[in-house]
Image: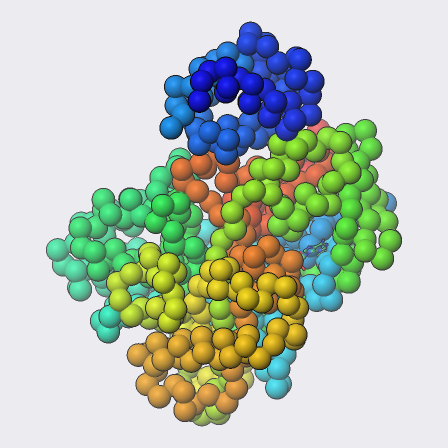
Length: 80
Length: 467
Ligand SMILES: Cc1cc2nc3c(=O)[nH]c(=O)nc-3n(C[C@H](O)[C@H](O)[C@H](O)COP(=O)(O)OP(=O)(O)OC[C@H]3O[C@@H](n4cnc5c(N)ncnc54)[C@H](O)[C@@H]3O)c2cc1C
């Protein structure tokens, strides 16, 4: 999957699952605020990435993913 | 208006009810079926009580894992009977081994048969005593392979863990260790049926002014301003409360939350897409009077050393747990034995659309055949068992699904996966601050796991109230 395909797909998925406007998702936007995540729904985000791409975001790397661009990077680098 | 409304009267629901009622909160427990207790309930046939999900409990001696919790819940007043010093016997491929109570005795007992693995056994029990949340990420099977070079011993130490779901790729060491350690500390059976435990908890709730209502299936929860305000039952009755605790399967809970805007799709998806553990087939035998002496240990019989893979090919039955019931009248002979073997959901496929009592002749034949296979394996320990049987009652995962509403009749709730611990172990919190989870699907199954979780669930409410 190319980066563009990942971006299109994950943006649509996150907007649907977290029930927000897809237009709010931009590469530099902060994930936590945009998706209104707390410690519980953060686990839901990890779940979506895992089911969709088979990519498990590890506990240690979680703090490094703050923007959507960093999330795309992570998926791109780790997808099988 | 109640302070706390609890959905489901399984062990976790009743324990939360008792703990919170003791704290002075007004508690209401709503149970969907006509009998309280969930997996703890017993049923009566031909003048005898049969249990469903209660065979033995570990760690009830003073100072041990479960003693304090059960004492606080009033459950230490029940007639617990300590099992034999050699509490679990294991037979694999015709060879006989025993687990002894106490970590040192456990090591010594097995080191007699496996002298070359004494150090490995010592390191194993050390590890069991030092389990932390980090072991949720450790694969139990990999750990055992690294610890024991003798494959037979690896199978032997895993044999009694049939009471959890043994899956090589996913079972976390955290879960495996919890199904072993408290029993090694000390093992106990109840002299009497599971309803003793259920009724004791209900008494505690009632004495503190709470209520437990059966035939009250909750079908919907309503949200107002980010909090759950009401539970609506199948008959239309509505109950209001300040807090809500769910002791039901999280996927079933999500169906009740369909109209709650604070619960986003992502949470629903995580709770409904999680896998379920394997169910159990049970053959409950009524033994002819004076035909068999009571034995105070369990026996786990396996055809071959394939403890970790047998459910992949469990037809015919490859392993069985034999649990004897304490004779209530104090006589030397027993009247009841349970035989249990894991039964994956795919074996239930032909009858998934059927209901209790209307599953057809082919289902009865299936159950008879499976019971026969269990009995054949059990005869490795009790020769001629077949001739001692007066009656045999069977149940399958379908029975648990239909009586308790557990999806796929999973015996231990939702599966935990060491490769994705964050996703499979759950928090007691939900997106709604006054709705909490409890029960076997959250962290750990079994009496110990459910009790630990009940304390955690209640602590949230107690801390909240203290603020
Ligand atoms: C065959 C078998 C043997 C076992 N043996 C042992 C053992 O020896 N030792 C041990 O420690 N553990 C054992 N266990 C495990 C143990 O019994 C369970 O982990 C524990 O009892 C589960 O408790 P729970 O609180 O999760 O609730 P459950 O028992 O799952 O009960 C949930 C309750 O909620 C009710 N309910 C469902 N939906 C609704 C609704 N919409 N509204 C209202 N009520 C609803 C159900 O009717 C049920 O009563 C065994 C389990 C099985 C299946």
